[in-house]
Image 1: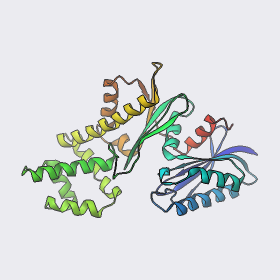
Image 2: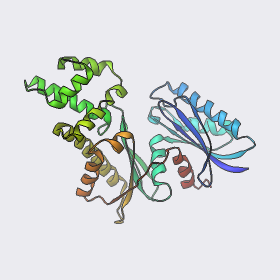
Image 3: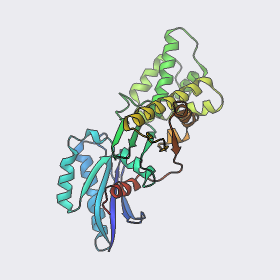
Length: 308
C-alpha cells in the first residue's frame, strides 16, 4: 500500500480532510462539519473532527497506509490543552497526530519546501500574519478576533468607514459620498440608525460591505482609497514586526510572502500599498504567486518534521 499523510483543515464552516501521498498528490478527500472552537463548543468541534478522521480511516483501509495526521484548527488558542488531544488521538488511532493553528497550515501551503523562511498574510473577514524562520520557529501576529485586533481585514475597513461617519456626524460635518453610499445600501436614512446595523449584524454580514468600499475606490473615491490604503499599511506593519521578531532576511536574502483571504487578494489598493510599505521600510521579499489549497500545508509540515 502507498503511504499517505492525512491533512485536516478545520474551519468555522467546514472541516476538510485529505489523504496526500508522498509525491504530494491528493488521493482522497472528504468534508465534514465545522471544527473551529470559535464557532462551536470545544467538545463539539473536536467531535466533528474525530468523526471525519474515522470516516477517512475507514475509506483508507486496504488502500493506503496513513503514516501521520496533521491537523490545522482555526482559533486553536480557544482549546485549553492541544497536547491532550494529540496524546488522546495518537493513542486512539495508533498514528502520530500533531495539531497546529490553521494559519501554520496556510503558511506551509505557501512556502512549501521551496523557502526556508517566509510569511503568509491572512486577510479576509478577519486577519492574521504567520511566519517561520530558518530555525523552524513559527509565530503568529494578530488573529485575536474582531473585537480586539483584526486591522487589515474586510470587517475592519467597514468599521473604519462607520467610525468616520459617526465622527463627521458628531462634528456637524456633511456626510462623505462613501458614507451616503453605505447608508443607501443599508436602506438607512439617518446615520444614528447605523448602530442598529452594527449591533444586530454578524461579523460576516458587516464584512460584505468591504466590496462596496473596493468598488468605490476603483471609481476614484478618495475616502475609499484611503481606507483601503490604511488596511494595506496596517498589514504591512504587522509583517515588519513579525519579520524582525523572527529575524527573517538577516542573511540579506529575500524571504517569501504569500496571501490567503479574498480581501487581501482582491480588494483594490490593499496589496499594492502593503508591498510598497515593505519596500519603503527596507524589507527584502519575494511574492509567492498563485493559490494552493491550505490543506497541502499538512503535507509540508509533516515533511519539515522528517516524517518521510
